[in-house]
Length: 141
Length: 444
Image (cartoon, rainbow over all chains, first blue to last red; front, top):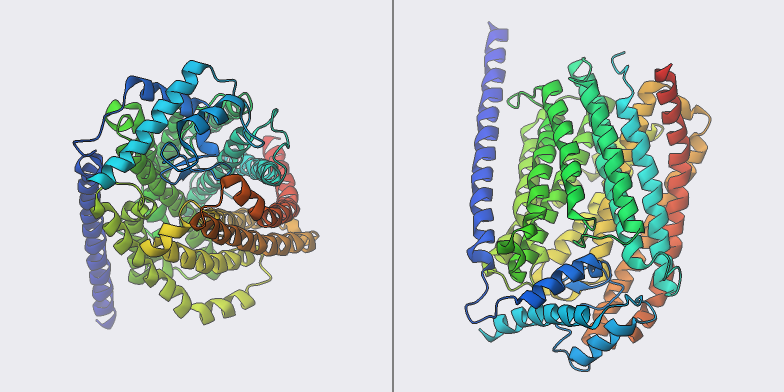
């Protein structure tokens, strides 16, 4: 009889815990799904007065990836640390378009010369300009 | 003896090769920090970094998967559901891995952070994981109501990796790619979950080994353990936003991330609360090599969690983000926590297969201490570099001047990186030799 009571209480505990575990899992998954939807839509929408990406900047973005610039440079804190963060390089004092263009043309002590064509440099600059204005527009708002 | 097939050992052997390769390329990258011309035209940093990162991530996933293939046979008392599928998994993994290395060495990139290979290679990579998932679920047929914590964690890790890996490639759709804010935010979100998913696989492995070493099956089923599991899962889902404080996305994302990240204080508190017990247990079981590595992981969890919580505070994150303090956090987690647990797992498996370290325990012990002391210097050098960078950024020092000022820190982290490589070589070379012997014996 004593054993039966013990057995029942253990079973009750296990069942109670199982219900809580399943219930918690379902709640978390529902919250995560809703949150993911929010992140994909309103949570990351660009302000209305911000310029959308141009086709040249789109090409620049793909070129940025093809050259693996992210291994040395950061955009919004994402990327490597061997080179400077490029998020606002187009509007920073003492940098800007001409400075960035010169670096792209010949490389530096650390950065290899990627032998970029004028067209490719323009595409990369268009992309960096686009990235830069996403921050400027946000703060203007 | 159930584990007659050798497929688990193929994965474990490959994982050690990946680890040593990853450390070697890490060293090369470190040298490029202090000697800017070093291999600049042959193996530039945009090649060494992905080689390093991909190989060490492969070490973590492959050692975890190999261990799980081995452990689920112990748990069920049966062979794998399909050994053929596991072999196909291994061959596909090998082909994909070699293709990725070839792409990196020849400068063909997809250029996404941590997934720098051409996107087409994500298809076979995804397929390998599906094969693993199919074999895992069919072998184990987990009944989650009664399952211990490690089964929950492995299930979570496998499922979340699949989801997050798909999410990582949403940039292929213009809706995500053409909006910079969305692209960066979703990238951080999926990376946070991918790291969380491998943590689930690795921590699940730690729970399994601890249960087998102590013989105590209560802890892996206790309500408190499950409470911390759900807290960890909540962090996996929502805390990634602390990487996006500087991204102009919705403030809700940041506020939620900050709030959730602070719940990690409970985990930290629990570690401190159980510290005395942990230390006495560690002393008691010090002679057992797997336990020694688990104890080291315990210390690094404390160290790393403290950094993680600190850099989740927006006022601190504002200064530390984009500095080497973030790298210290990542390295502390991957080397200090994940690698120590996975080495414990490998030594635990080696123990099951024969007492091979009888004559070489001195060498392993040396390797253990060299690795851990080097890691401490390595992390301190990174934190020092991070603080110095923060100061220089505030002073608006030009980038090249700043890099020169930081070079002593880079010197320390490269030298201590060499120490980690040496220590790991002392540990892993005899271990890989033993694994190779097992593979050969099982073939005959």
